[in-house]
Amino acid sequence: MMEVVTTRIPPFERFYLLHRDEVLGYLRRLLGQRAEDAWQETFLRALRAYPRLAHGRHLRAWVFTIATNVAMDELRRKHGETVLHDENGAGPATELERDAFRELEHLTGDLPPTERAAVVLRYGYDLPYAEIGAALGSSEDAARAAASSGVRRLRRTLERYP
Amino acid sequence: MSVTPDLDARFRAAALAEGIVDVRYDVIDTPIGDLLVAQTEGGLCRIAFRPEGQDESLARAFGVRVLRAPLDDVRRELDEYFEGKRTAFDLPIDLRVAPFHEQVLHELATVPYGRTETYGGLARRVGRPRAARAIGTVMHSNPIPIVLPCHRIIGANGSLTGYGGGLHVKRHLLELEGALLPGSA
Image (cartoon, rainbow over all chains, first blue to last red):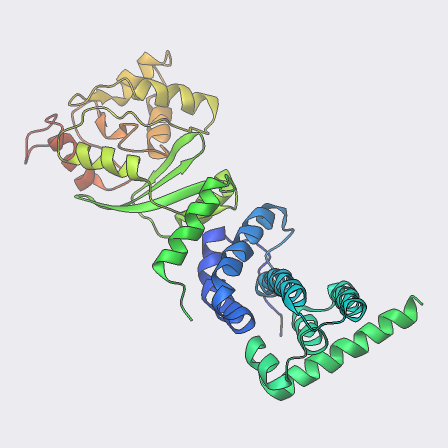
């Protein structure tokens, strides 16, 4: 059977109406009350980049990648604030944690968005798989699978470029 | 999870404020039905009698960053026109058409409210007295009807000939402007 692929880039309004609600739901699960600013930032970034798209395929994955990046920025900001306000935290260890955290975000930059989110939320934010599953709109098992798949992919990448 | 009207409006306003929208459009309710109106940074660029699917056409003509947003100035001027309180439009216009079309549409814009002109008459005005048929083509593809008043162009024998929004709309506009007695033609 021949697969019908639409490559035309739809008018932004159509793309926006199609994805605005589910992206807000996704960001709500990741960020809670702070989701609205991140949601607006996600669609502003999408609109800025929209004329540079080469085709109209994978737009849903594309906007979820943007949303994940915005959420990571926001979580990083909050993580930083939390560290600053942690009176008991030992300085050097905390710094080390933050460096490791940045490294993780950097390393996972090329993973598919779901795997990236699963890896970062699991190993960067220490979220249980049930919560990651809820954040990603899937099950606990699917979140565990996405994280382990992401880790395997990272391992292969690291072996290739030692 | 639904985006609230307030959040939606904030996003649209932020996008417009940042100047990253190629063309914005609105659908407004008028006595002749819903009209899609569209505007670029340069001005009013489209009025369409059938709003459905126009966003695709706008994307091709002006860029893919098409966003729906209120066009209050356009709405106000059209409201005033349909109430019979406005005889000329003050809206800036962004006309992106071939040179001959541009010449004809500029000439068309000088046909005053409440008057009519024939296809042949408009052809003579642009120095192409034998081009009445080509004038018809330009009228048919007029991107900004009503504001560029192609409804004021009629056949030499006084017949209304044709109109993109339908002959009943052409008759309505000419009656509104007093160029046609109700029930005539």
